[in-house]
Length: 187
Image: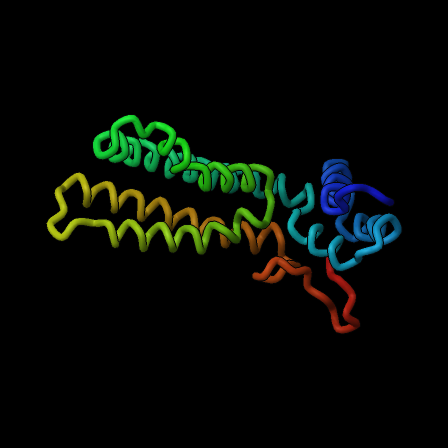
């Protein structure tokens, strides 16, 4: 199958077939016949859970989404207060602050494995940044805000790891599909 962007075509085929309830093993067989790059097909397929697993962990995924939305709203509110108090007329900067969180929400809402994996380094980075920016003599509001955000971020990281392992059991931490002894992909 020839096209302008094989990644888009492979992802489209994966999404359509997963939505129909087809197994990942059958989807991989189809992709092998349609696209030349088996490694690319396998890597892209490894990022998406089966429909059955999506349905099974739908509620846990919703909890993660709710936590991510809370984190995003909190960041927007506090970043907005800081930006508008320190830099008047800096409203465009306020839009840039939550873009990473919105991207994570979008990935997790689509059950994309990349969203779960990105939660860990981005969460750790966010925790380090919050603790680094905490004043030497913090006010009560600083302590409460940092504590609440820290708990939310830690909960999101733990849920992301659990969901990643449950939704994508045959995918490595580097988002590669696992192989059996015969070096065949396991789906």
